[in-house]
Each structure stands twice: as structure tokens, then as C-alpha cells.
Image 1: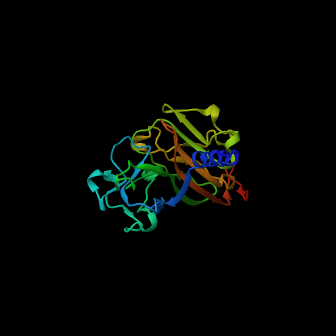
Image 2: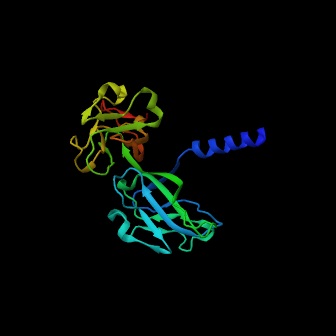
Image 3: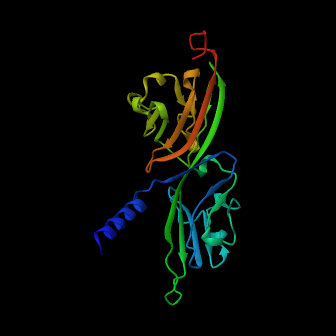
Length: 253
């Protein structure tokens, strides 16, 4: 093998292994398309869509030998996932997830098994694509109002982070570890002005409350479940319009 071919092979290998995780953003109640390109030169015998952060052997979507199997599917996805192209034309194995909720946020993986030319053997399903699904929301409030940024995880949770993209270097909006608020890692501006809606985080409710929002609170807030494998659940865009500030005066900034 020539040096050029070797370098090209190394570059391709790095690209395949280092390419960033595709992120799909969707609003609550809308449909999300999870893309995956299967082989175009072989018959697709098996298709598996899984959700990496769930401790279950069941699937988001399971297809084998031209038939879907609902009994292999997680109950929360029943009736909500279908092939974008039932014929899987040109290897298109995209699926559409309908009526998205916070609980759907996470990393999805697409596995494809095909028939090889060697004696028409069936290959084991291989990972083709990984997609991070982020649930978005947009809230508009008046300055001085109490604002709730909704976020829900799957089941019990004790570790949570709320971040704002433009303030990451200075600290978190809110952070809780083992069910305890960690104030020394919190951005000074938010101390005493934010809290969890439910301090017990029952049923996975990790919504954040801004006690008195101001126009400077406008921004993009991100909610993470950091228990075990860190998982981004929701992105909330908050727009705070001018109104009374925390000192009772009218503010435009």
C-alpha cells in the first residue's frame, strides 16, 4: 500500500470515528425525523432503532424480513414510530417519531443488518448512525414574573444541571448532585433567584423556577440529567420583555 493510500485510510478512519454526534431539535408535541442511510447495494433484512440511555433490551423500532415487530418495542413508543419510506428506497431507513415529549430526549442509534453476496448470508446488524434528540421550547414572559422552565427525565433522578450557553464559563444556572444543591458551582447572578420546582424531583420532574425574571435573563437554557451517563434533555429559549425589575423599577435591560 502506498503512503498516500495509507494516509487516506487513516484520514477516513478518523473521520468515521471522530465525526460529531448529529443533533436533532424538536418542539414538544411535534414530529421528529431520525435519519439513517442503509446500504444501497444489498437487501436490508433487519433494522433496529434503539435508545442508548434506556436500560432495556426492547427497541424504539424493530424490523426484520419485511415486517415490523411491535412486541419487541418499548411500550412508550407504541404507535408513535414508523418508517419514513416503507419501501426503504435506496437504503433509506429514516424513522418518524410522532408527538415528541421530554421523555423522548436522548441518544438514538440505528443498526442495519443486510444480506451479503457470499452465499446470501445475513450479516449481524451494524451501527450506522447515532442521533441526539433535544426537545426545545420557547417561553415569553414579562420582567418581574415567576417563570418555570419545564424539564422531565425518565424516572427517578438526583443529579441535574441547568446551563445557559453564554454563561457556561462563569458557572451553572443550577446544579444538584445526590439531591443536594451545589451553590459553589453556580453562577453568582443566579444564587437565591432560581430553584427547582420540585426539590424532591419526584417522577423525574427537574423543572427550574426563576423567581423574578428580568430582561437580562433572556437566553437559551439547557437541562441535563447527569445521573449516570450525562444526557441533554431539553433546550428552552426564554425571552423576557421589559417590566418591573427586582427593585420595583421599570427596566429595559
